[in-house]
Length: 131
Image (cartoon, rainbow, N blue to C red):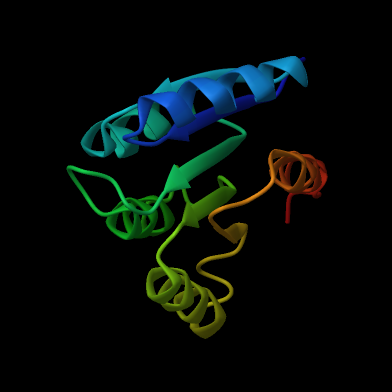
């Protein structure tokens, strides 16, 4: 069965590009352009992976990440977060490193990134055994 991926980004072009690239790899992809809906959608859909932009227009990606990891239903869903903001990437990396058990399964990617690198990470994350 195809793995389910939810991509959340406020940039329509990037959302559709990522959807096309991931679907070409046989993943079932849902997209969401508004971050405020992300937690609710993740909780109802329970995707195999969430790909989340940290810089959303309506809510912080970090806030969404914290909500997901604090909730018993969604805490084990792996998350790939990405951002062009170096300081934000460093802040999330510090958060993960200071609470590795709580933020298990979270990976930080700095923009710009190569789509092939992202696909490699997606495959790696989805093939990781559940702990």
